[in-house]
Length: 111
Length: 252
Image 1: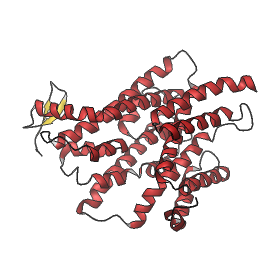
Image 2: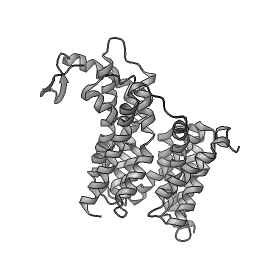
Image 3: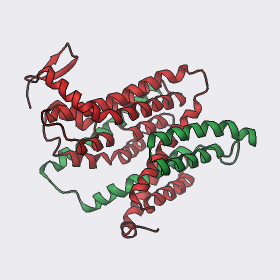
Image 4: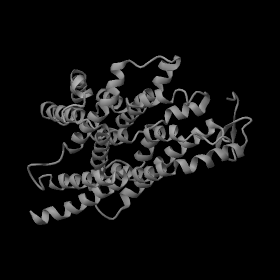
């Protein structure tokens, strides 16, 4: 991708984001109610989208070769366990990263 | 709201006429302790975003740049990842819209609170993120502080801390004396924790299951470069079709 194309993609992301933030101020200015279906989708879609984004993050992990994705899976498991107990996002991410670096170094030695 | 805007060179920011420096100062002073927890985590996650951007081989300044013009954590990570793929403007727009669509609900909730106008409101609409949204309703401004200036101070400090973190990460990433590629895992960690947190709050597993199934199937059908848009379509349709079981609490 050229530099110009990259800038164009960033501009698209920026404009779309501004649009989502500004639109309600333009549409619902007069106290119009949000349609029921839209409200429902707004409640359940974000969860599904983050599930998709996790799949998106893991799509390039090699599960059949190299470290077989073991560092990724183990780090995620450790991180989730910590998060369920402590419910502290920052701590969970930090733990996940440390676990990942650790397994990345350890698994090739074990294999 | 004042119509005339003057530029205060000594402070380097525009201020409405009639609002002296001490008033603006007190708004920032009142908002600072409220914003501090969010600011702390934003500097840290912003820093990791900067590292992520450079670990992916993009120039360091892309991090604070995207933090400024996009200012949506998840979107910025996905945008950085998409900059490495092939140029797909329409896919980018669709994915951006779907990821950011939730902001519409925050904006709706803030309609009344941001009832004033002018450039401050414009900026606050521009920079409304879940964390600012989460801060606003819980903490009303102290009685002696101008609410407009208070909300503005909150939003500005939150975004500035994110940009600062991203800038430090972006400029530090390339000079670190070791291989930073593993920092690419930051995005995975972040999204997994957000997903887990949402699932714990919602107590309904079905939407997440639909998200995983739809995207894994689409990944195999359409391939890694173009499965996001089909996934979004499939999961939206499934969520609409399965509305009744989902609202009943789903499959336990």
